Image (tube, rainbow, N blue to C red; front, side, top):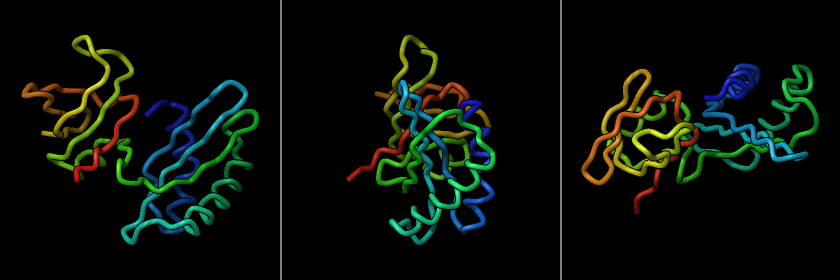
Length: 151
C-alpha cells in the first residue's frame, strides 16, 4: 500500500469501522487537476447503495477535518464487486487457490503483470502459479491486485 494511501486508510479506518463496515482499501488516483479517492468497504451481509452513502458522509466529514489531500477531489465509496481488489496479505490469505490478477510497481523476472492461481501467502509475500511456474511476489511491490471471478 503506498504511503499516502496508508495515511488516508489510517485516518478514515476508525470512522468506517464505527459504522460497522470493513475498510478493504484506498485508491488515491491523481489525474491532472482531477483527483479521485476511491475507498472499498465490505460487510458480511453485503453492501448496498445506502451503506455507501452513509460511509461517504462520514468519511467526507473526517477528510474535511484532517485534510490529507490538497486541492479538490471526488470521493467514491464502493463495494468490492466480483473482481474484488486485494490490498493486504490478510486479504490474499482469505482466497487460497483462487485466480488473481497482480500488477507490480517494479518488474520482476522481466514482467509486471501476473495472472495465476494463488498458492501461498506469507506475511510479506505471496506465491502465484502462472502457466505451471510459481512466482514469489512481495506485497510491498504490488501496485494493484484483484481476485478474478471464475464462473
